Image (cartoon, rainbow, N blue to C red; front, side, top):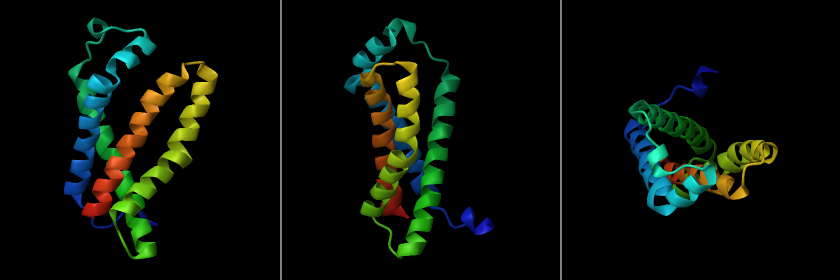
Length: 140
């Protein structure tokens, strides 16, 4: 059981994957989908005055996401004896399709939020996981 979590992580890859998540978030909720996202949540730029602690917590959660993805990839790597860009992306995609997508879509159905908001918010998570998987898969 302890072998599940204990192995040599590439902490530089995990840090890079965490940073990539923050950069993607800046772009995704800024120039790419920022205006559409704000309209869908009923806010303007003036309404958004986030506490800086939100960015710190977001970064820590991005690192956690990268660490867990690294753990998944390590165990996949051990079973197939190869780590690569493709394996990193595939494991990340499976994590989204198997866990994130269904759980969040189910919540979205009951909340009645616009499907476009779901697509923006969880499309971001999908792309973030794919980028993190690629970074960790190549850099393990």
